[in-house]
Image 1 (cartoon, rainbow, N blue to C red):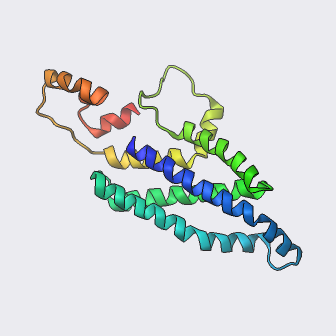
Image 2 (cartoon, rainbow, N blue to C red):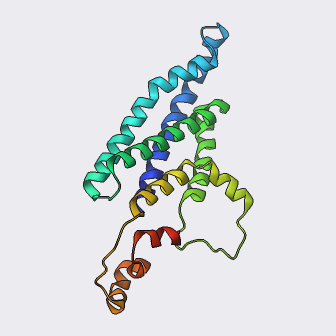
Length: 197
């Protein structure tokens, strides 16, 4: 849940900041393009080089504080790279949505539902997947475009792969832990957790 909330938080902040700034600059950019000051590609590249370092640095700071305060098993490099890439992809999504909106309000009105859909399809279902039912093809296609899904999957895999839990507890010890830990009380290692997801 902690890794998921981090992904959602960074996605929302990056997307909303980009939508707000990008849509507010639209009028100025259109006026300057009418004068042939620069092309759309030149503007986009300049915007990317100006904004991406700030967005990436916030993701790097967030990842380092998260690692320091929580003691996650994942390496600092994995956390930083994953959060940074996810933030940059959310900024890119903001550029795409902002480019089709005429005002900042329209951009926000378009961006929020898109982000909610990407969050809903991107979050891992903790109860697992029902293998008896065929997956909805539309939802599977939407999942492919969710930066939140890819970031959560990468972070959860990095955290749980190869992890071993306490081996000295017997069956009854696991049952005693059940109210406190839920379904994780019966799990033996991190690979078992990944298989269930």
